[in-house]
Amino acid sequence: MESRWFAAWLEKLRHPRQRWLRIPVGIALVLGGVVGFLPVVGFWMIPVGLSLLALDFPAADKANRWIETKVKAALAWVTRRKTPD
Image 1 (cartoon, rainbow, N blue to C red):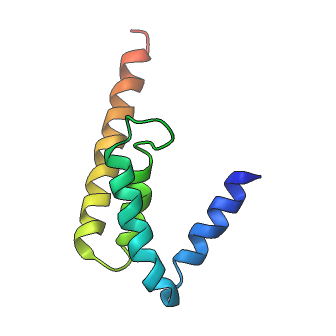
Image 2 (image 1 turned 45 degrees about the vertical axis):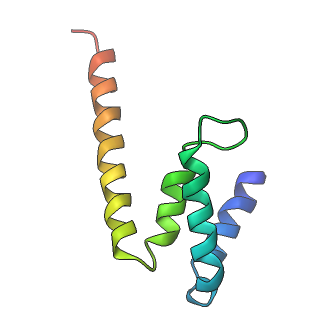
Image 3 (image 1 turned 180 degrees about the vertical axis):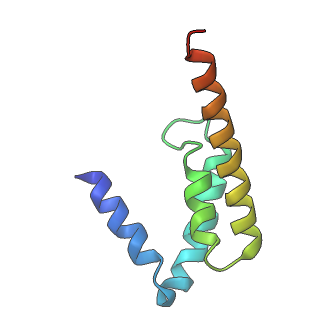
C-alpha cells in the first residue's frame, strides 16, 4: 500500500505545474542518495531524484540514462555469471 502512495506522489510531482516542488525534491533525493550508506536513506534515491530533475534539466536526463545503462549491464553480467556452463 505504501508503494502505491509513493508512486501516486511521484506522478503528481511530474505534472508541469509542480516544477517549483519537483526541483527541490529531486535535489534532496540525489543528495540523500549520495549518503546512501547511512541508515534510512539509500542509493535508490539517486535515480529517483535524477528522474524528477530530468524533466527540467537535460544534464540530469543524460546522467539518468548513463546510470540506467550501467545498471542494466551489471545485471546482465550477474545473470551470465549465475548461468551454469
